[in-house]
Image 1 (tube, rainbow, N blue to C red):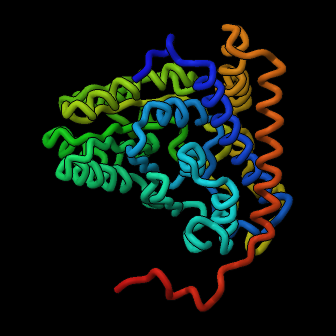
Image 2 (image 1 turned 30 degrees about the horizontal axis):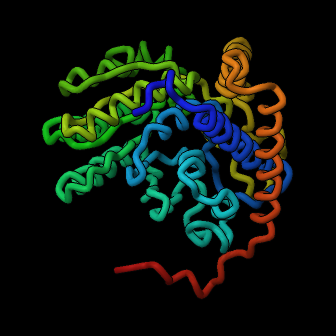
Image 3 (image 1 turned 135 degrees about the vertical axis):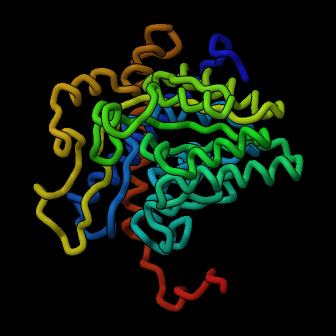
Length: 343
């Protein structure tokens, strides 16, 4: 891993660009519920607020390392190289999507870009990641598997069972617990009192004799350092680590079903509309990971305001074109329903 102090201007600009791409992509998904009701069938679980956590972690991966998140999964393939237009077309359930429209928002997969699968079941992707890590260990590929999941998943049996097995077998996996302050609709402070034994959540690593660390998930460079150390440990054969990345999710747990279309006032678009904590929301906005990193780059002389604006304009133009492409993509053909199905 390259130390933070030695990261090039190009690499830091790449980080900022990817963070912006995730935010602008998620904004387009969110706006679809209002501007094009019915295009997205069912829920979409957004990750705006998680940009520093996602990019900081993935900036440490090797070329062939695998990434396996939960159903809140749009940002990861964007960073890995999945074409944004094919990704949005999949969320729109269109033929040009990465799964030909049959996966949708919660079931994305792009093996060609080291993104083998996601899971719509809370916590199950943790076990899948350990399985992929075991395969890498047996085959001696040198791959590390990055497993991303929410704080709610740490209450599932699969979390504890998998961490125990991964520790015993010294599997090459990095577990990144993304604590976005809400387990669906339950605030983490209420979880402290009613649902969790032990804080911070990284303390759970002690039960399995593996390293655990809690990091500021709004600081892309701090995430980079913490996950980078864990990835090096895994690659060296020393086994897994648990990184708790803490940040605030700006959107609610999931946006509303719009088939049939529902009035705008019943749709969930911002966390404040659902959770009602104005002070908390405004404090999180002031600590926005993208604005924070932008200020850092300019303050350190790595980028000028004009250079940052050029990146921002380029990303927004890209995402505008992505929406046009996805909307123009045809729906899956009925005769394709039985393809790619095995018994």
